[in-house]
Image (cartoon, rainbow, N blue to C red; front, side, top):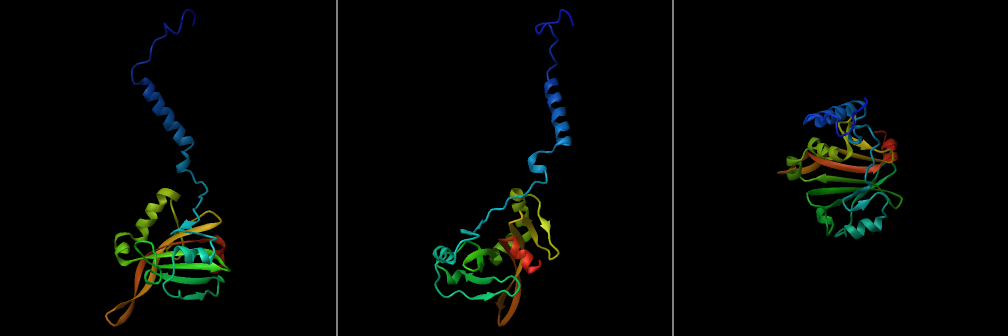
Length: 193
């Protein structure tokens, strides 16, 4: 318009800019949700309980010095040697964890599983632990075997109940304990889970 200069232009009412900005943000949200709300590829850490996937057995022994021999067995499906480390069989051990399984293929760690104690399990169920991890990795998927999981194509992180044999009086019974497991993705495919 002729004669209209920036100095003579009508100034917007107070709050008009805020309303316009709110409307623009709402419009942007509808068309393009923020990055944290999109279905983006998850990138999982390859680190759990001071161990990295790919660490050699000597690193496991250095971090958790054995006080006695660790029992192990070879899984027929995955071709993995699973080593059982308990609080009583290592000089150092993660808090609130009763049992740690370390899966080795050759001389490299391909799986780390933490099975928490009864006190921790009574306070933190797999569902509540999955909710905490969802803050970092987004909403988990649910497997057919009731395991919460996240995957990035190379690694899988799972949360579930693990059965642990315990003595009650003179009877051996199975207790359900909260468990957190990190493994290479090819291991899950080999096991067919």
